Image 1 (cartoon, rainbow, N blue to C red):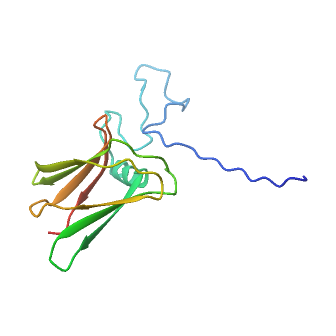
Image 2: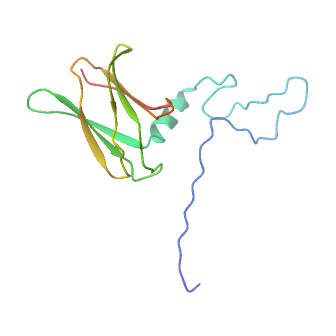
Image 3: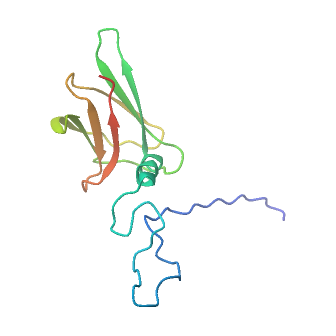
Amino acid sequence: MKNSQKSAGIINFCLNDYRTQMGEQGQYQFRRRVHGSVDIFGEPKPSYYVVQEVCSPVAILERNDETGGTFLCLSVKETLPCYLIEDYEIIFRREGEVIAKSIIPTLKPGETWEVQVPKQANSIYIVRPNGFLVKEMSLRV
């Protein structure tokens, strides 16, 4: 081969296995598979949260400054998954109650954004524009 080209590929993870050919005959056939990160009722298994973390497009570092303020540095991953985030929202909470919300600016892979955490917040949620939860994180209080 004169041109040595490299190829790469990925397989997207599916919440459950819908292509398995087993279990489709008989009286008690399952249309939903028991493989994957949700059970046959669509409830998350422990692996669901691991997949959610690994597949999140953002990484978060928490830091404190010399005045005692807490800041989060969000960086968009340059590894898979790797894509532009736009109109995502960060929600600050305390014991399930929303304290504050902020729209995250549009960020390309490799870019970062820093935000100050409200003093009373003890967790954050990052959600897509459609409301889907991308990442949740407990904060050091």
